[in-house]
Each structure stands twice: as structure tokens, then as C-alpha cells.
Image (cartoon, rainbow, N blue to C red; front, side, top):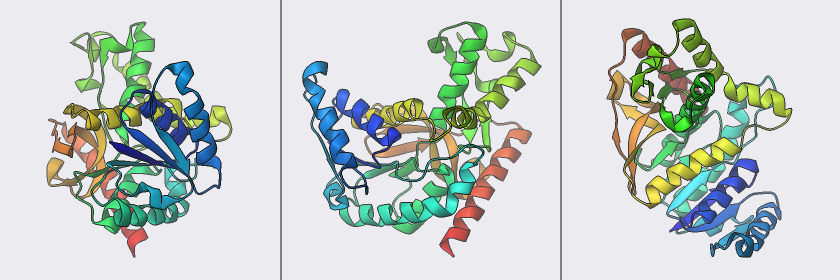
Length: 306
């Protein structure tokens, strides 16, 4: 399997390291900055004897090398600065994504494409529209990262292991995300059995603001350890045809009563991409919030396409 990662910044290079280290396939790292991807690939290549992993990794600034890729991960784009929302990145990253996706369409039309560029939901829908790819084979990383953040915060609050928590988040990857306490379990028991409503509400708010909090602390750039782990999990699930349920930014065309837009929902993922969108029994308030988030994505993408 050939996995191409477009964008050799912190997220892209760490993703390359994780995928190569797990032996999920041959890895190609691409970046427009001359020498950047090549240098990072050489460095990762030199780590093989120490790690005792015989992976294959190459780096280049030549997008044409993505030809024949089985999976393409797009991390290219500008990172958020402190105080900047994902939506403020829209215009700048849309042009970067357009150039990348049109090349992928020409060179690797059969690949499964994972969008990571922010604002993620809008960029995923935009990429679908400009490429014409099947929604099963082009989707965004999105809420798999947000699920991890909610899980981590709940575990910290309760002093438990992360593996004791089964959390769920839907909606946009950003201010429109919706952690779902009612679907979250602690050792199989409902979350509200362990904490009161105010504490749950606080954890929900902290989850929504987690990305911005990390950006503020870093001062420059954004999160990369957890996002790269989330991407690697997606690639692993595809490569090994695990058919796991993972939160993804998926195109919806009737599911949840939403049409022709993208948002974060649980999906069954395998070697052919998204096999099924899992529909949850949401409350009316949750449905309303999900529809609002999805509508905003559709409107923003439509502006880009005009």
C-alpha cells in the first residue's frame, strides 16, 4: 500500500512517522517548500536501525509522485494563530486545497483521500465538489480527534484510564462540535452517574475550546501529536480493513435529515472507505444544533464555489 501525505509540517511529518513505524505501507511525504519533505524523510529513514523497523519513506516537492497512491492524506495549509478561528483560515487554505485536490484527481483518482486542512468540514465539502470523488472515498479526519479530547478530559476529571471511557462527539470540527454526554459511558455506565450536570457542561465546553487553548499556549502553530495519532488510526483502519466505527467528517445526503453537506458523524470504515454512516437517536435540541452546523458548512462551501 502506498500512502502519500501532502504537507510536511508538524502534523504531516508526525503522521508519516506513525504510519511508517506501524508498517502500514510505503510512505511518501510531499511539501511545496523545496527540501523540507526530503529532509524530514531522510531523518525518518535514518531512524530505521534504531527503531528496528524496515519501512520505506521518501520525501519530495514533486506532487506528481503521488501517482498510484492508495491513500492520500492532505494536511497542507496554514495553521491557526492565537485568536484565529478555523473559519478565518477559509480563503487562504481553500486555494491551497484546490491545487492539491486537482492534482490528486489527475494522478491518484482511485485513492481514498483524508482531508485534514482546516476549517476541516468546509474544506472536505469543497474538496468533494471540486473533485467529484465519491463521498465514501473522500472524507475528513474531524471528530475522531474531538472524541479523543473529550475522552481524555473525562478520564482526567474522574481519575480513570482513558480506556475506561467510551465518548462520542458529532458535528463540526470547531466551534460547531457537539460532545454527547448522553452517549458517553464510563466502564459501561452512563456518564451522568459519575458527575453532575454542571461538571458535564464544563467538560463539554473545555472539549470545544481545547484546540484553541492549545494554539494559545503554543503561541505559534497548532496541535500535532493528537491529530497525527487520529490520522494514523484512520489509515490503519483502512489498511487493515478493520471496519471500525470512527468519527469522521462525512458527506450526508439524507442521513440525520441533512442533505448535500459535510459534518462529523460516526462511520464504519474499511478498505473501501466509508461503508456506512451510523445514525444516532438524537434529542430535538441535538438535531437542531447538528443541522445548524451542517448548514453553515454548506453555505461557506457554496461561497467558495461561486
